[in-house]
Length: 209
Ligand code: PRP
Ligand code: URA
Image (cartoon, rainbow, N blue to C red; front, side):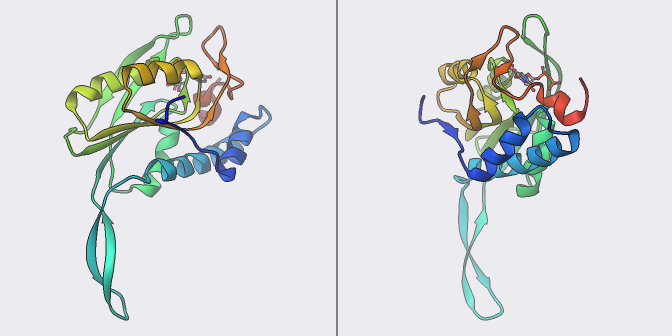
């Protein structure tokens, strides 16, 4: 797989993912480990953010410090992507947030859009799109296709589990997009669910079925 795919193998991430995969994990535990894993994933995904050198004064002396300069826009894909926003906001309290509502058709697995509200994207925007499950890549592809013409500084994907089919589709259409994920799973099943996967992320995080 291309170097733009980053599977984060940190033990805290992999331990949390194991809890998410397990079907016995309760709603409360699922939320706990999802929040933890997503914050850690964002931490990894943000390591290339730019900083400016600034002068500061500690109680003891004047020294140099660094200040974040990038304007970050986080775009969670509703509904399951909303679960990832909490972790992102803890790390990036000044980021702007955009929302897209997408839902896959149960038969065709093609996503249809029901909501769209994004902040203005400029050539300085670092755009991070978040969706826990990168399955066929249809949902994230649909989103990136609408953001790319606005020429942001960069676009990245943060997902919890990715399928090879979805990664391949995204890499083909958006070769510059970096993908950060906790796992590259085996394949999709006949219903376009990721295998072994963890089931329906939105249902498990929000308690629906
Ligand atoms: C799920 C998931 C992704 C999408 C991934 O959403 O949260 O958005 O499927 O599949 P894809 O890569 O094949 O497009 P779903 O349509 O189940 O909606 P939900 O988030 O409201 O549960
Ligand atoms: N959406 C999910 O929530 N899970 C999958 O395995 C695929 C799409």
